[in-house]
Length: 88
Image (cartoon, rainbow, N blue to C red; front, side, top):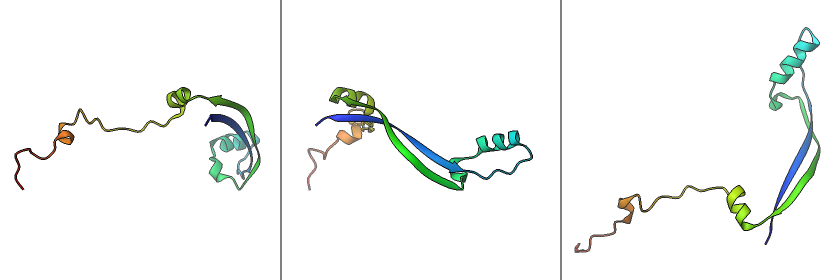
């Protein structure tokens, strides 16, 4: 099975309501606002602008999410089993 990497661009229309005394002050306030503060959000399009196929080596090197694995050798308590001379 092959792996593909798609890079996309999403075009979103947002409507903000800004209260200010001048146009420049309104622009400044707009730049400080978060997207969540928009009154309306509308997705106008989602377009793929680049696609590529990658092999297993590239996937492991660049895209695979690294999971933290326990170091079994560095933790001697994890290597201990029941004592050999222990009588049950």
